[in-house]
Image 1 (cartoon, rainbow, N blue to C red):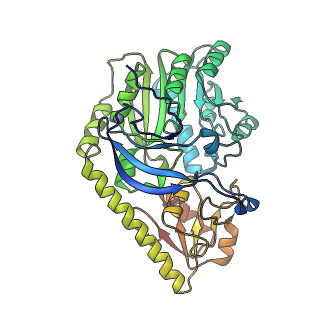
Image 2 (image 1 turned 135 degrees about the vertical axis):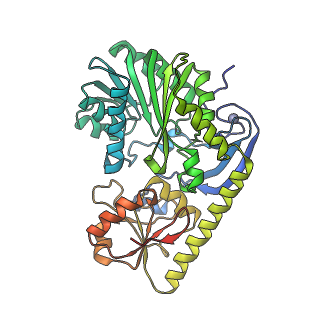
Length: 419
Ligand SMILES: [Zn+2]
């Protein structure tokens, strides 16, 4: 029997994949506001909701997950301020994904590619450049940017009934991609059934998710937030997909978001599976991803990094030095709130001029997000790299633009960059 993968809202008492109640607490990060709920100035005087954020591990199937489901309308509101096209590195990888799929799976110009959670259409631009027909599905207003850029997009949540409509209108789909949303959706059962409706047997479903092994090895606790319900490793994902008669035929590790896995699943039962699948499951076991002690060590490292960052910024503050933030990705909310960094220790966060976040305030601690020009003019003594998982290319760019501040990298261990 397939466990119910459409989760109720609120506190969860069972595993999101196998349904077991044997969940162990890895780390309690406390209550946090939704990480992308940036505030307008007038909202600063209003109440702000926060929700439990607890990192849990299923002893049964090995899935690492959080145990609280916030309503998707709260997390993915119409003005959701995230654009995937905005980071050059990310945009290049996403389009590369499309090129790779078209080449490796020999898709031709009659093929239709659909991206679920298509954001500003970056992935689909790649398929389009290869001559395929494309359709995006994106519930937030970023869909309008995609449409303006020539990517047909349905502005709705992806559901089974939407999948039926799309199939009736466009015919069978050759490839469905879901990059960095597969871990977010609380109605995963409906999503996979919907994808199955779109595809014929042998049709390809490609997902990208932040990868648990990278998260654990590089102490990326800041990627734990309510939008990420699951923290995938390959083994539990194989179990999940098999419930729906999909075969994972290939997998690769990619650098996106500080380490992700791209998983290729084919509809139906297939014997031809890449050696990479078995090899990665084996690596996960060797690295202790299914052992309790790995998570004990991870929690200790997180706590240590919090204490170090807080004491470093507090010391600098006492010495009269100014410390600002650089970059405000969703994950910054988790680290800023968990480490209790506020406007005293960090008076502002600098973002590039094209960011949709300028003029807003970080959730919880209410740190203003300003145009990076202010930082270039001021050259504060220190700046904390909140997008530390992309640190090298960002620092290079900032130096070219004339930033002289010393840069603090908060994770895996707090240190001041030599660059
Ligand atoms: Zn489980």
